[in-house]
Length: 183
Image (cartoon, rainbow, N blue to C red; front, side):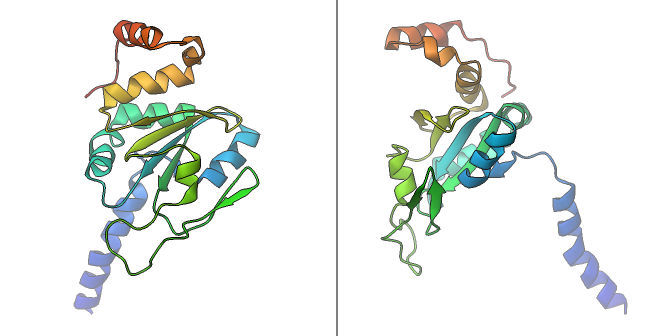
């Protein structure tokens, strides 16, 4: 009987700990984000990653776990986590996207889901930003620290991106930006 209780505790504690962890980004699918926009319009941020991508794992570990990033993203965006090599079909704006070259038993790189190509993704990680109507704003490739990500989150959330017409405008915005997120 004591062994059963001990085993139950061993298996139950991680579940309880996971259930109590409310501190993460509220990730969803693109279909869920588009549906949520109907009730409460927000911009969408899509983290396009792959399972083998080292910088993608660093973004999860160092950036998406940052309390300031979590709070800001959850409050101002619908956050979508999308594996660019996913075998699952994606429904978006009346189109179905798939990964026709996916091989179930293959390790490492494994085809590319057409949805990531439709978003203009060519490298990982890439953060894709969409407006409140799920219209593409832009895709930003590469690893970002919390403060580097903050610059983009606030640029798109505030609609200041609409004022940027040149590289010089972007440089001016970056130089005048004062980060508030903790590293």
